[in-house]
Length: 275
Image (cartoon, rainbow, N blue to C red):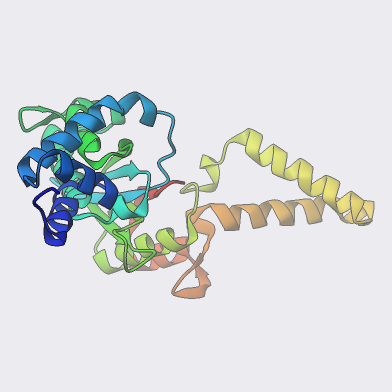
């Protein structure tokens, strides 16, 4: 029987981020030597890279960094919530976020190629995924720049790392208002900043659906134009940040709140893990 204890299994799980049975199997092969067991996990994991390629990564976390007037948002994805909340996975996400800032990587391609330790972000992810025994991928990277940046991270569960991340690029005197808007974005997930940012084909589709729905409801022909425009306006209020009702005061729009505070938002980005 291999010479290891339950505490050794626990320690290897925390160090590697791998599952309990994988850790026990690795310790069996390594005759209880934790360092050798780490190598066993890594070698077995590297052999399984191809098998993992088709798996779904619906868990993970979001990390934000703000440096030199630039905000960076990163989503690191994995297969299970067990790995997502593992100390090793969280530390990996932090290392990647720091590498992205150091390289000023503003796209996914640039982030994967960014230097990390003696390798690249892409290679480090592959090595760490091999040890964890799961598919791990850097899914999204975004960067915003303006006079100021607010970053907000939200936990959808107290047992998990942040699952929602928001960056708001803005100018103006009220950092508090900008942060309130970032929190609002996390909760209400607008798709665009301004009405003009909605693609024309999307507006036309919404208008067509609204008209067909009104006709099917038997609305009078004379009222159709007003009804259709009202429903299209409703679409804007649901999806356009500046036209949404503000979370902290639904009697005002986000645009009005920003105007009153003298704040201008130039852009925002919102990530939700798996979305």
